[in-house]
Amino acid sequence: MRVTDDGGLTATDTATVTIVNVAPVATFDAPASSPAGFPFTLSLTSAHDPSAADTSAGLEYAFDCGDGYGAFGGSASASCPTTDVGVTSVGGKIRDKDGGVSEYRGSVSVVVVTFSSLCDLVRAYSTDPKVADDLCDKLERAATAPTAGGREGLLAAFVGQVGAKTDKGLTPAQAAELTLLAARL
Figure 1: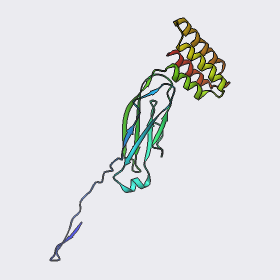
Figure 2 (figure 1 turned 120 degrees about the vertical axis):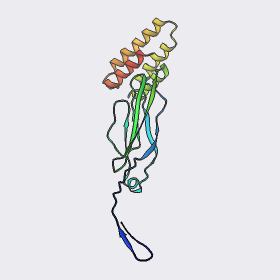
Figure 3 (figure 1 turned 30 degrees about the horizontal axis):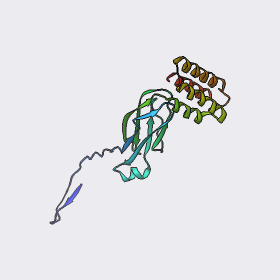
Figure 4 (figure 1 turned 90 degrees about the vertical axis):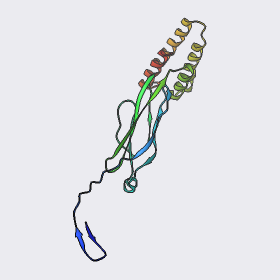
């Protein structure tokens, strides 16, 4: 550094200046709950980095849907699948071009399946509307069955038909999920 006063005298000195990167920040959005079988969305909104250069270069995001973080990328949101009930620990990270990272954590309660929500999932999965109607009919009748035995019988028929439709309108993963969730009713 060189300094000159009004009289023309100059002085020179050196100093070490350390510049520290400040990580970007955002607001982490995760639902408090989500029905079993349906995906929920995680997002990082209102992203901000104090460095205009970092902001211009683009910020990157990574999300943990309960099974570890995925790779960083340009999308500020992620869709997370659900396959069973329980509390899922989730997270989001935001990163700038200089490697500054902020992490946010939360939890999503994947709530108990209902007859109605399971029917909605059947309709979302099935490629054959008639099969979906038949499966939903079994669920509707099980929901209103006057006895526990009647309900169990109708749920067993539902599970049997789901098994029969594996690779014939339902993928093996979809069939396994429907069977698991039916057992939660």
